[in-house]
Amino acid sequence: MKKLTILLFSIVFFTSCEKIMFEENKQASNPKENFDYLWDQCDTKYSYFDVKNIDWNAIKVKYSAKIYEGMSEDSLFSVLGGMLNELKDDHTNLISSFNISSYGVNYGGQDNFDWRIVKDNYLPRHYYNSGPFAHEFLKGQNNEIGYIRFAAFTGTVNETNLNFILERYKNTKGLILDLRENGGGAVTDVFQILSRFIDNETTVFYSRLKTGPDHNEFSEPEASIVKPFDGIRYTKKVAVLIDRSTFSAGSFTALSARAIPNLILMGDTTGGGLGLPNGGQLPNGWTYRFSTTQALTLDKKPDFEQGVPPDITVLFDWTNLTQDEVIERAVLELQ
Figure (tube, one colour):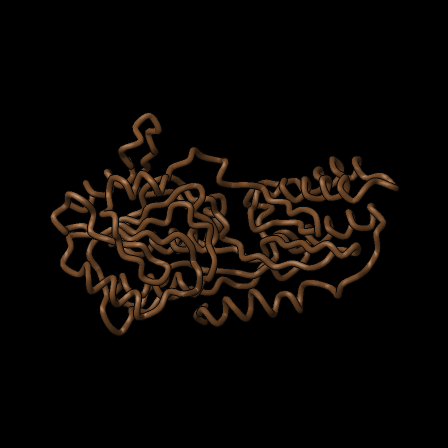
């Protein structure tokens, strides 16, 4: 089976499908023409209608009734953005010079992270910053648990910062990798991080690309495989902390963690974002994007687009601002 590598993510999903799936740009300002164009593009190319049980034809009826000749650009944007938000997908956006539409999947659950609470109660004042990672031994744990905060997939994860971190915490009982409120970014970071937590080549999920106009037309699933790093690795327990604001590359990491035995997902269900986005331009020049792929579980099901669930659910108690319940539960798991 052909392996879905990082190169395939970057080339196939972000370059090829733009050339294959999206037509050349047009220029027009008629509200109905723009509405029909956007609805048709989604109808033939969005990847999660069946998973989310979305009746796209009913949504067309609902929103087309709001379209009228001579409506303002602001009003048209509101209608088109509202229609896209019915997909409940933060990889789906409409972008104009005056506004950007976004659904807001993080509002589907309570806030479950506060960086100030973590810094005040669990880390020394002068913790380490190594590239995109903030890290230190957890307070009160006799240097037996390392805490690593990874706030965004910035594309700056590399051998140097990972080697330093894993060398520093190699004698711990376990690590906490905190991905809460990580909204995603560079998929390459996912594979670099995961390669440090395995000893054997591991299939972590499958992916497929929307290929035809019917809602269920996809390419054959291809395996996404992580290879162990040829150097320092950490294969003791790692508690991976997630919440509703863990999105996109964060959800890919959470999905992958389910295939790696020493990684334990803890916190709240992620925000999803397992369909990689692509897009184009409306006749009036506004740009749009939406998910055109599916990430699949090891049994090749697209079940977690609306969120990867934790192995252990833990929610914040906001009446106590001196404690992070998710970290506290992670400590119990790692001791």
